[in-house]
Amino acid sequence: MGRSFGIGEFLYLLKAIPWTLLLSLGALVGGGIVGLFIAILRIAPSRPLQWLAIGYIELFQGTPVLMQLFVTYYGLAVLFNLQVDAWPAVLLAFTLYSGAFLGEIWRGSIQAIPRPQWEAAECLSLSFPKQLWYVILPQAARISIPPTVGFAVQLIKSTSIAAIIGFVELTRAGQLMTNATFRPMIVYPIVAALYFILCWPLSLLAQTLERRIDATLGIKQHF
Amino acid sequence: MPLLALSSISKRFGAHQALAEVSLAVEPGEVVAIIGRSGSGKSTLLRCINGLERPDSGTIEFDGRVFEPTPRRLKALRREIGIVFQSYNLFPHLCVERNITLGPTAAKGMKLTAARELARKVVRMVDLEDKIAAYPQQLSGGQQQRVAIARALAMEPRLMLFDEITAALDPELIGEVVRVLDRLARDGMTMVLVTHEMGFARRSADTIVFMHQGRIWEKGAPAKLFGAPVTAELASFIDAILSVDPSARRRVRTGMTFPCRRRSEFRQVHGNA
Image 1 (cartoon, rainbow over the protein chains, first blue to last red):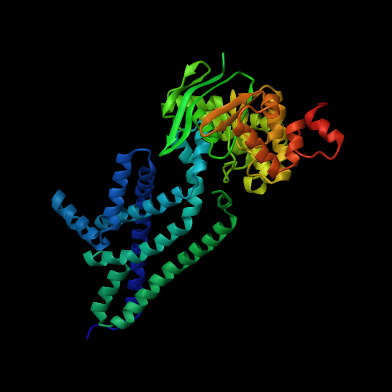
Image 2 (image 1 turned 30 degrees about the vertical axis):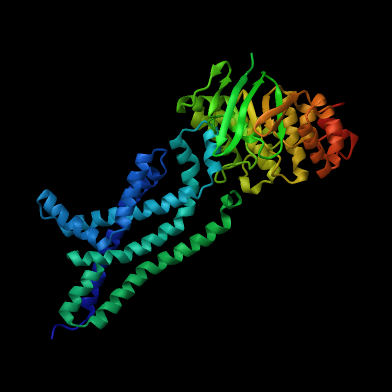
């Protein structure tokens, strides 16, 4: 028999939480930058740019994130002939993945802003970037907050996949503890509970924001 | 020389001929009211003038220059031509003042302090000094529409376009908007309006243009057009308006927009007409 599951093993799980959070946060920030770029390309007044963005979105939404992870992890190694750490590989994979989903969420938020808002800005002699910056994005940002927070919850749970290539975050730590203690029915419920504690406040936040924005958003009157 | 000259403008949406060979000249200071049934091409014509729609053929001259739809020329044109829409289209996330200063600062590079000064001036022109810090959703439709007018005026345009700006308003709010239009007309602003406000058209317009099936069917001074329509289409259009709203008969006759309860109120609005 291995060792028993005690306070030391529990602390080991807790110590993995920062890595899960760091990966989620990194992917959210990196994916946010990629996503904003993709969202703007998607609505840019140029067909080739739109196709580029659509291609990117379809590629990353239409393939399993696990495959993206494998391709990044092994791909980096093969392409650049170097043995990469798990960390840059998972961060890159989740950044690209988040970029596609956030891009699509934000594209939807931008397109939810009524066409006359664009026209009104255009008729004030504003250029396309200025129409976007002063008129469209501030309104789209308010709409996009609930789905963006919702995606962040999904992302935190998805990062568990990084365990497969050996990146020690919460799930991987759970696997290691299970291997050491042979107590999967103690370890995994605890791991699940820890995920829940991370995600639940965010879910609550998303619901609250959704209710508040529904109640206050003036643009609902326009159509 | 006319400020605006349209020659043979045509525009087609699929199988629908929205505009057919429309030619129109607008002199500086002239007020042109475009009337006609819905679908007669009125709004399309207005949208062609400031480049929101591109005509299939024909030329548009503004201030003696033929207009070409390059982004640079479009931007320049929109500093000269203001437009107000039926649905106000204020920016809901910005207060009244910022709605007004956005164009001058972001498009014309005006300093914010100067733009705020300008904002105070234009809200005074539409009687909304006390609402300068309000947000659009806190205002009534009539107030929102007056802010939209102020926003367009802040660009200091040489031509103003109005696209059925009272059509979405409750009847009791129409008067306050029309009053602003009257004042602009009196102050010599060059204006092209699509309107159903026959009282205003009669009173303040120099020229009435009746559009039918994408063409200018009849054109002339208000008294002539309303008094003695030449074509059967215009006669039946006027009849149709009057039968929907019998009180409009008096308005077309007298140029009054809304029932005034007191003589003094009437004078205040219309002068000693």
